[in-house]
Length: 139
Image (cartoon, rainbow, N blue to C red; front, side):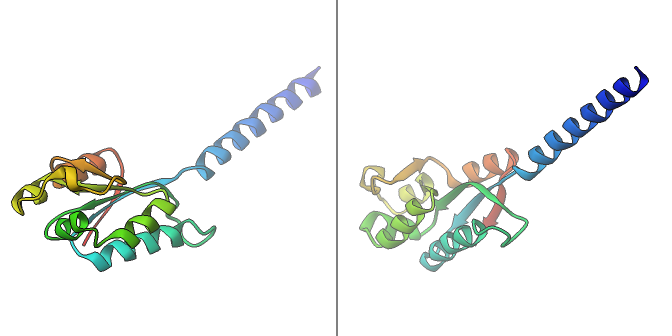
């Protein structure tokens, strides 16, 4: 009887260890990029793609968000980021246009490409995502 109880204890401990190891292994890191230059959008997408390669880093991307701010919203509305937006979509990245920047440059949010979401204030959105645990890259 003692042997049976001992085996049950060992089985319970091993089960707990396996569940804990699987939980730790499946953790991902959500990332937000706050970007103001076209080349940084390209580099952000390439970085996400690299991080998705097994063993490339201890950072394992979960959700990825790019917020376009500043003068870059002009290119966004004019269609100058089409290739970058396609690459972002292929990587599962959510792209947002900053409403404050659109307003500053007199641009209408209805002119955003269909794959781009709108946020009233990109800076506030970035802060909220950081508070929710996102890693932040600001260029």
